[in-house]
Amino acid sequence: MVTLCISTTMVLTLLGLVVLSVLTARNLQKSLRENVEINVILGDTIPVESGKALGASIRKEAYAREVVYISREEALKMAKAEMGIDPTEFTGTNPFSPELTVKMEAQYANTDSLSKIVKMLKADKRVVDIAYTKDEIEGMNRILEPVNIALLVLSALLIFICYTLISNSIQLGVYSRRFLIHTMKLVGASWAFIRRPFLRNAVIVGLVSASLTCCLLGGIIYAAMPYMPHVQEIVTWQELAITAACVFVFGFVIMVFCTLLSVNKFLRMTAGELYKI
Image (cartoon, rainbow, N blue to C red; front, side, top):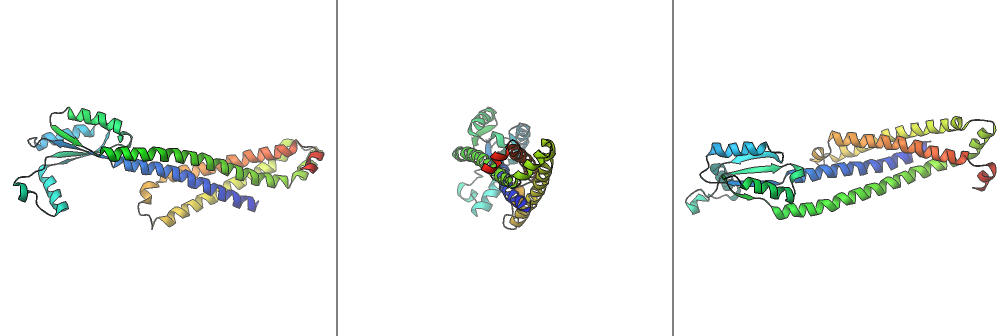
């Protein structure tokens, strides 16, 4: 039972890492998409109040996560800080226009949605131009889509491997007690009575292994925090709770299911068949 518990814990840890990786990859992709910005360039003669009013109306739209109004003076100040020189020394006037920086919601950070949003914003007479890094967004989407598919395929493959490993471990344990099962059949014990202790052990092993797995995964994340300062932004309590729930459900269901299959297999065998295997 101890050996089965250890092997099940190792397999569930692998499964937990896969689930956690899929969830954190989703968060990472969402974070990347939410960093997409579009710059709405306004006319030089547009009053500050009018520009802020436009920003407030954009903020009410479903695609806008955050809208920041940048006046001509603020834009000039930011340019001085970044370049270390004053552009007005060369141009004689402030070359910057007021603008709105719009950060997008993750689901709208794609070229199709952005094209519609840009067309809608350009219809406003206060808007002179709209700038956004179209090539970078297209490149990001081209990379993220294959990553999603690869993660799904990898998850399915590893779940199958986890099931196979746990199933084989349980079958070996039941195989070593196959003659005890047959003896209990000979003395008149019902199949339900014979299965009961095996299922009880399976539930105990599943719950203990799942608990150990959750502790191990928590320890891994805690140990990684000093080396990955932003891990808390990607691995939230929600992801940890979902991972723990998946580990417990999988540990319980797979242990009970595999135990039922293995015990029923030997219950159907005759004495001659037991000696042949």
